[in-house]
Image 1 (cartoon, rainbow, N blue to C red):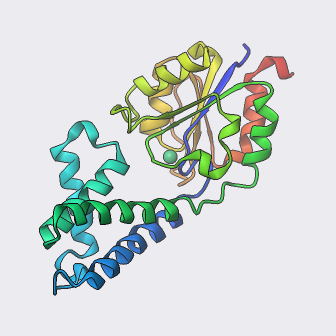
Image 2: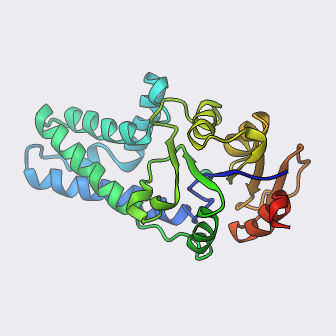
Image 3: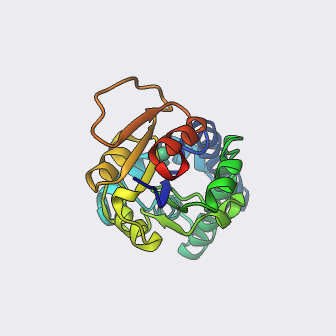
Length: 243
Ligand SMILES: [Mg+2]
């Protein structure tokens, strides 16, 4: 068989995301607290009235209240900050303004990402040979990482209200790339959200087992690796034109 298109998950596939989020999560909220306390509209510090855990619980509650938007992490985060600030006693216009500023802080921290060193050369080499796409549930803007020029389709599944494992973002990517499922490969770290939905559609799938969950019985067309650097070998095997 020959391969026409390759789609990629982002977080924990092209970079190690844990440390990025572990830093971004408390840091932007602390920043927000400092700004709000400095306004002196409310005497109780924000972190005392609404500690980080309250903000996280509020986001969970929003996902239950707005199930369609549960995958739109940007909307959930900004909305949670807005509602907390209103409850904290800020006028709605101020709350809106500071929620937007807090979200900007978060996004700046969210993008302090270093893709694995193998990633850029891999895309350089493949962009000439394959149509490349991104399918992500997250809110990383690949334009901010200077990686976007390699991709013919960038699907933000959460923002289309159909987060993976929904099949729609995969179908949408295949349509935009003009690829048949059996001539396309999806690469991702999540068994449930990347591997299974792609495999069910007839795509090939590479499971980046970054957390080293271990060997398991693999359905047809699925390959397990532990790091993206192993991909070129797999792609060469899948694509007979390369041999
Ligand atoms: Mg991922």
